[in-house]
Length: 391
Image 1 (cartoon, helix red, strand yellow):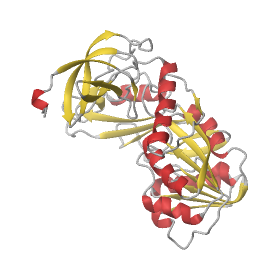
Image 2: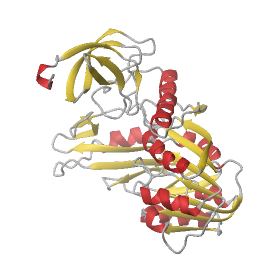
Image 3: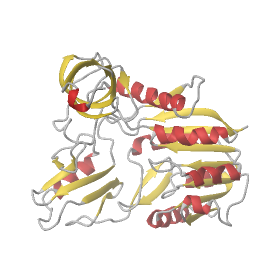
């Protein structure tokens, strides 16, 4: 039996495809290898970084023959900075990889064996990111993102995926790092009135800003979540809600009301639920300013709320947009107990989406449509909207 000590330090492999998480898949010497920053079709010499049983995690030591879809990453920090992991791919191959990753998760995790047609909405490839989380190393006066697979800070002067307002903020903040502080996170988000930053630094603060999306005005700040790629949001909202209408709609993990407002224009009664108190305050303000008095927003843990007295039954539509970890078991069971006529699941992680879909499909729902949105170009992340119908 071979041990990690008897394995070679380097192997020559061919990358077969990209997996959820963005790593390349290869096989050699009895091992299944996960290779970071790879392109499908690459012939590479890899360094074995870590072994777990018959699975090895590896990084590229030398490119023997480049894949036809490999390009030279334009960012000088690529490979060290942990922010982007798809810059080595043509944009067309990025989109195809994301569709393939969703299909893989649906088949392997959700056990959806029938072929699924998935349309993906492309994005501007660069300067799309209107929200960022930066890390600081005050002792070195560094500001940027964590180094890949590390808690060390990669000092970044220019980030090619930031919208211009955030790039300007990044440059300004570099001169204000306090030497007395340890490594901290700095959240920043851009709106029509400028940039909101948390925690306050120099002239920047977590002030209220807003952005108009598909005719709706949303107020938010760096202390509350709002989507990264504002340019794709009109299409995302349209795909999630479309022409749906009826009596009752429920919006779980509603945030500042991205879907709550358009739902309130189409349904007689709308209920939003969100655990973050800052976000729910913004959601109520956004509804009030839009003069939508047919919606109410609860500040509550979603799973606990689904067990509470405010919950009715048989809503016409239930929409959920959970964090990357997906929905808890108590949330899925609560949704199934409600028996909504339609479910719309908005997800930023194909694996947890597929895990939850498996339960919803077993609970009596069927897939209607699956649509992808490239909200995060140059990374393996992808947004997916799934519509489900009651059997």
